[in-house]
Length: 514
Image (cartoon, rainbow, N blue to C red; front, side, top):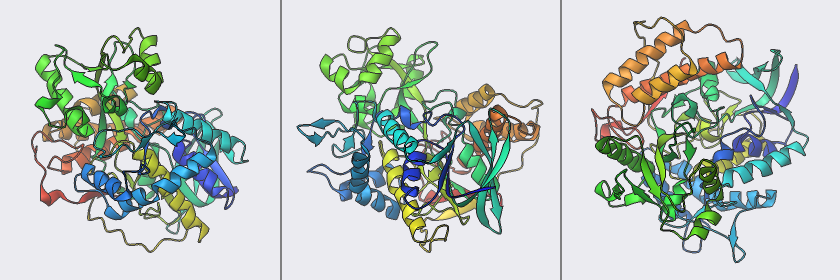
């Protein structure tokens, strides 16, 4: 059995960046179920937020992040995020990430709910792709071993400590086990649980399911962010139209051509994502349509082409010139604020098991992620994982997690009328229709009962598809039952039967199977 000081599960920015840091301290193995180049990071358009502008400060970034989190962000984690951001940006520059510049200085743009222009980008709207390519090239030349098309199927826990991982080779069916000093989950999110989503096809919640089954605590799963503007064209998979498009002056119009966001909020198009997404849903209901439009036809053509080259080209390839015609858009599942509960050193409740990136819940995002904070979160807390490792790999930290939590277990539900296991499409349709942007007790209870029944009907996994299916059902249950328990509306979680927030719910829901 092979041993590595660090084993990384996942090859997005979280896995790649952390592996490069860990390589300075010991042996490293990356396990990824697809190609090293296939990840959600590649699709990230908006950029990375960091308070590096002359009129900005970590305190202002802290305040904006806390405000977006709607009462549930962990102040210590947010302070670390904002304070350490400039140094982590320097790390990316040193690694060769080609951030866009103006007159020799890194260009900064504005996005919704930021009080300052603090969003860095690369290649206009190709930030994630540039970072991913830069990091993957570094990994390829570093000597780090990478197992592609290899699925992690079980975290091995011995005497309360994560000691390694079992894997399944998706090409050959070979089963192996690897031992680790530190096991780091960096598997990304779970957007594929929803019919309309902006995520890569790999985002099936694998890390959440792995961690939960091993005894790790899972928190804040009711808070799933729906991006307000994904391209909605017949026969075309949802394609993200970046928040930065509205930041640069894009206008939302209904199907009748009328600008409508001011009807819902004084902030208009620059309101927080959850507000914009719900406003669009209500406007679509009013007009009986499945989309609205985002209009940049009034902006200088050269601005659209240079600032959003990928968006412009993608739309043009599908017969739409956005400099002349508004683009049809609608909300789509985008980002998971909850995840594996970790402290400020990236540690879970299981010694030797860490998590970073979208699969982790550091407490930074609270009930609603501030735009472009996700990649920054990866940089800050991945660095802290390896800093902790340099002082003693796998030793549990003594920092006190101050988040107020209430523990739960998954419920017991009647089998009901469900008689067959689900397909991917079944899960995606159920979650979108019953656990989407607008929720209520009736729809959530129906989804929870169906998912529980599906879980009992699924046969033991034998290939990548069946492992992913099993993981999606598990994570679907965690999202649904958390949403059912939280009887209020807060951040990205909206209940039509409890439309107001309540001070009684200023705590986190944590699920455990122990």
